[in-house]
Length: 338
Image (cartoon, rainbow, N blue to C red):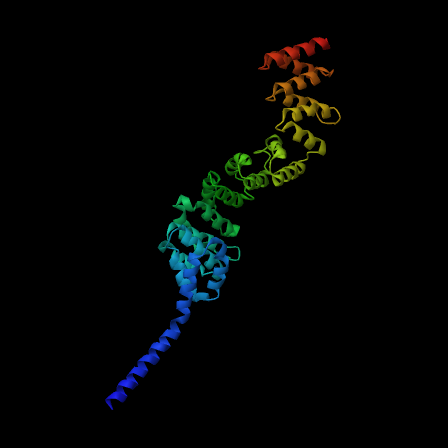
């Protein structure tokens, strides 16, 4: 009888344990899948993230816990969280539990394009992130995701001014995206130097923003981009200048006069009198060129014109050019004209 009772008790314990094990199996499998994702190589990351996605919400606690880790761990976890799209409220509620790398991942996850955010949902997280300069790029990205009506103008203006001064191109780009359609002169003034940024995407974005602000970036401030090393920047610059009324003739001369090769810049003289542009304006620009050979070309071309203004320009060159050789040649051109 005692043996029967012990056997029955053992059977009940095993059944309960078995039931608990079956209940825990999906959670254990999800934990293992997340563990494999965190160890995956960059080439394996996407495939392993898809495996994690198949476990649904069972994987979320393990992925969120990983956001307390170092940068590589957080990047791996972020790949899985992108596919599972955790609730905004959960990400915001737990934000301070995460490492700075995990907090950056949260800002990027909140900025995913498929989300429709309300400012009140993310205000607390954004205020906390503003205190960490390392998160500024991600914070700007999140701010730009909010609908214009949802943005705090004072907060965004402060972020933009900070972001435009960043050395990081991603921060600059996020700030520029947030700057679209602004008429704030101070902000636009900070955008203008980015026309010379090392990153083509930044230069192109700055061009787009300044296209309707000739008082900040005039035509002359944009001409050099017609010879940009990046074809998309060149095309964008041409579009902007055409929208401001520059003709094909102006654009052709502008490409020549802003070319890096002095020989190309000197070609302006050859084309100048075949167009209906203001020759005096272009010759004056050439007379201030950095290359002495170009300034000599300008003096020679101006000396061949009967216009009194052109003769005055040659006289200026003969008296004020920094190069003795250029001054001497300009004087010679004047003497021949007389």
